[in-house]
Length: 265
Image 1 (tube, rainbow, N blue to C red):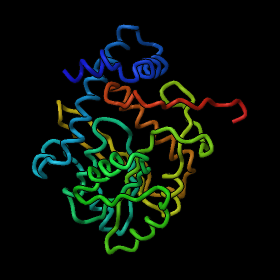
Image 2 (image 1 turned 180 degrees about the horizontal axis):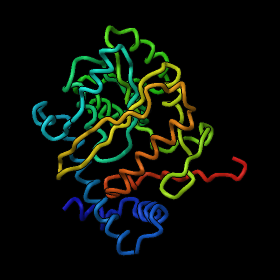
Image 3 (image 1 turned 135 degrees about the horizontal axis):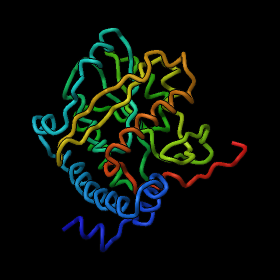
Image 4 (image 1 turned 90 degrees about the vertical axis):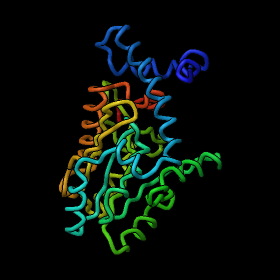
């Protein structure tokens, strides 16, 4: 019922969704793209409910539904005293990544967030993401917050959702992503190189309705040996791989391509 309301009555950002999918998959038929649109709406509604459920779900239940299948990788880096950067996309159920503290006490988990103007929704998202022990750091105080976290008695892993659009003034790089020139944010790569963290990509794999596996993939153990741009390209290559495999699980309603590349850029 909720799917029907969002899809056919409210028609939530339908034009944005259809345009994003059409430009990303020009090789597909109209019928194939329409199927992605329908399946996206089904997942979007389900994921929204799942994220709200995160406020009440038991630790035992979330560990059954969202499984980190190689947490030992993080524990090994923590044992070496290495801090880590994890980059993820708006794919699967990214909010449930905040359950990672339940899987190990060998490291501290943090994330940067952009404050939402609406106080109710800002507090709601903070409550969701911090429920199981994630440290939420305001982006406007990122450097100070990260320095304070680095003073703790355990290594840390900082998670970044890195595929959203960024203000034009903050665009430093463009990548070829889903068949389009894409303006990208570089803050996470700058920070990873500044603090010489291990850089990881989190692959979230939907396996059934309401069930996911999460697998950490190493991008680099030495971010200072590669450029910011190459770090960013490596992340987007992995994200695009996952989207092409199961496109309905990405957040197509986001206005991702509102900036257009000028030839001189």
